[in-house]
Length: 153
Image: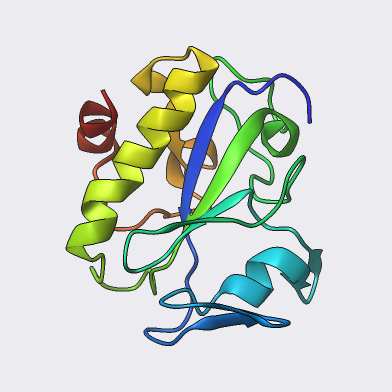
């Protein structure tokens, strides 16, 4: 990981319900746990640094670089360096309909605010994958990122 410049938000595009398991660990409301830690065919894990369950609980998936950003750019981060410069958060959502829970709507911006505050960065350093990779990604779906950043602030 290089200097952390911001937070990149995602949705998992995972199952509509269920719990996640990893060895003896069970995480209620986060069925994508194994995928975000170990990866998927064609993309080794970890796929994020942090996860957010349907109950709005934060989960640590990995420390250091994660493979979440892919190619993309924003003015304040070097192009195609999001994996090593941005904290990746995968929040549980199918991504094809607005299935965000009230707890997620509250705790997603709240947690991102805590991260950015710790880093000494402003709310404008919270971006959606759809902003990093415009035209290629849609996540986090059903979030207006301007409103998200206002909630982070």
